[in-house]
Image (cartoon, rainbow, N blue to C red; front, side, top):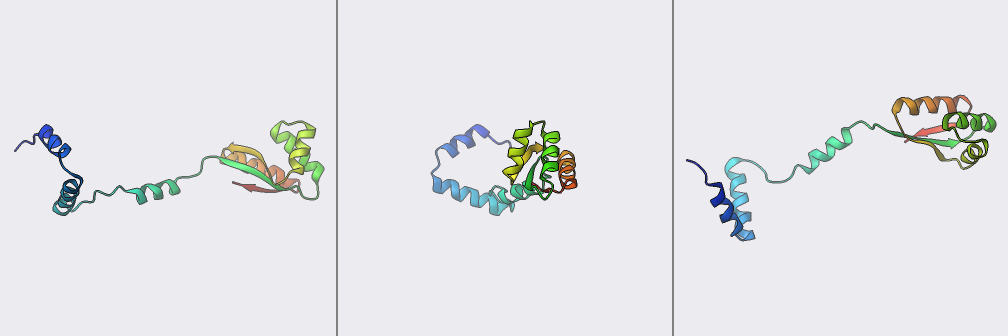
Length: 120
């Protein structure tokens, strides 16, 4: 038995919402399927995906503020005044959208000079 797709589509166009709802329920019952979109599964897949970019936030400058300013200057390429302003404004992002390896490297450099750093 061949299906006449065009005829089926025309019949569906002429059906009321209640008739379409009944049709969906009948198909679900007959074939043991669900017409509901798999929203929960899609959301779970997004959460399971690894984070690919990180923001490095200078949380506190610590006791060695001058060393932290020098480290920020080396990491960012900013001038002395801009680096000092960034350190003074902590908590503040030092770099945004970097890879995990680069973020960990920056964190290590800043923690070595006494700063407190958070990866986001």
